[in-house]
Image 1 (cartoon, each protein chain N blue to C red):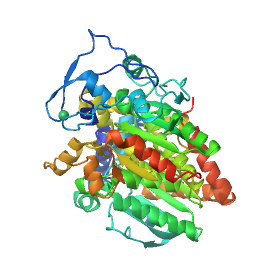
Image 2: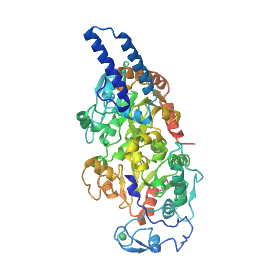
Image 3: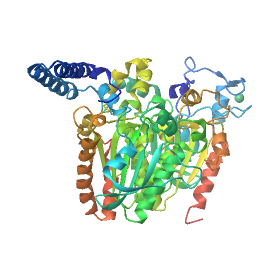
Image 4: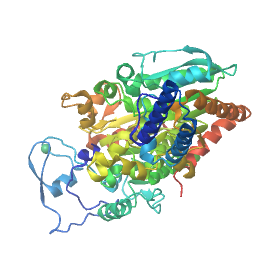
Amino acid sequence: MLKDLFRKQKRYITVRPGTVPEREEEKEPLWIKCPGCGEILYVRELEKGLKVCSKCRYHFRLSAPERIAATVDDNTFQELDGDLQAVDPLSFPAYRPKLSSAEQETGMRDAILTGQGTIEGWPVLIGALEPNFIMGSMGCIVGEKITRLIEKALKERLPVILFSASGGARMQEGVFSLMQMAKTSAAIARLHEAGILYVSVLTDPTTGGVLASFATLGDIILAEPGALIGFAGRRVTEQTLKEKLPPDFQTAEFCFNHGLIDLIVPRNEMRQILAQILSLHSERG
Amino acid sequence: MPNVILDFEKPLLELENRIAELKQYAGEKGIDLAAEINLLENRLRELKKEIYENLTPWQRTQLARHPERPNALDYFKLLFTDFLPLCGDRCYGDDPALVGGIARFEGVPVTVIGHMKGHNTKENLARNFGMPSPEGFRKALRLAQQAEKFGRPVISLIDTPGAYSGAGAEERGQAWAIANNLFAFSRLKTPIIVIITGEGGSGGALALGVGDVLLMLENSIFSVISPEGCAAILWKDAQRAPEAARVLKLTASELLSLGLIDGVIPEPLGGAHRDPEGTADNIRAEIRQRLQELRRIDTEQLVAARWSRLRRIGCF
Ligand SMILES: [Zn+2]
């Protein structure tokens, strides 16, 4: 089940662009054990290093605000459609309380943060999914915000970058969620016809309906090392096959080896690679 | 009578058996039991109406998955003439879980595609239970693009538990294949009519679901997750699938009132499997009317309207 992908991780104070993170000493731990190598890491050091283990290069998950902060130039990010609030079109059992606690936990209204900013000076429309908001799942608001971002890109002829981190379509919004796959994909098809660049970055984890829609439609598809990337959950696949799968199954490396993505880019090189891509697609050259 | 009788249909079966017994007895003994038989036949008619007009979402799910429900090739035979099957994705293989080709609809050439289930275990094993691999989705897209080239409308029939979740499917880019269909079908310059005939299971269904009109047979279902999967997540208990079927709003009438589909095609009393010809007649009438409407619209407008339909979904 996709739920397994979202083992509770230690949460950190949100890094808003241009602000210094504050720490509540008694709530946040000073030390954390790296799941990659078992090394005990000093949290403050880890955050300075974009949450990548200095010893084994394990990439810890980033929240959407952390992702944006790590990607765009300081003080350039302007959020778009931040007022859009999650909806419950089916009056689904236990969904409203789930939304409220996700809101409280992440400080976000749904599972995506979108906006405009620059990367090494290149203007870009950018979005990042929030893996801690109901597993980063895509419901109406995620679909709508991505669509609006693309519509703005069409109007202003700006490139689009989307960072995915998601368990897939959001069950609680039923077919409305499912149709967001079609909606976002069709929006990207219009962007494609208009000749506008779209870069998709797959981060840990990108699965299900998000992978089967906008996340795999980039002109260029990048991924972070070690990210879990797959359509069906590993357990589902194992049950289907009744056999154990290789350890690298459904990782960024597995996808790269099968020709499904362009490049695996370590987090500390991401900004530079994105800037290079933007530069290669700009009229200024 | 179908071979597989669902739980909620058992009272009907008992009554039908009783009528048959009486008829046989009357014939053998030369006794006139017409009055009794007539009474029971009236009762049967009433009971049928009562049962089939008050189906729960879970009962409809069972009808949608009924092994004897007409499959894509059954419908191709019933709805079209001159069906020419076309195979392969031109890259890796041919997927038996997804069929397609060219045929005539009331004389006019059309491209037809559909998920393909079997009617029994042997057929289902051969068809992978109607769960396509990437090759299947790529074949569907290839045939649809061929339809665009030759100006043929596309008729797409959906009936799948979902996309196949095997290791090979992952290696060959299952998610990439589905996404690419959503992307490409949304801009295809030819009319596309989509009909969910049985199970509309998640992304694997949607990969054949982007078009100008989305219709559902009365007892078909369309859902982001199976009721069993939903129950397992919500209540850690797949046995509660009937409840999950209710909360998911997966029936044709519910999805129509939510504005997510464009129409419901009625099925003969008792479901499509009890009267495939009658069901096909209803589908035929709908295709005829929709095709007539869509062919009047020029392609630019058609594609623009297809986009605005999708664009509206999920704005509250
Ligand atoms: Zn480490």
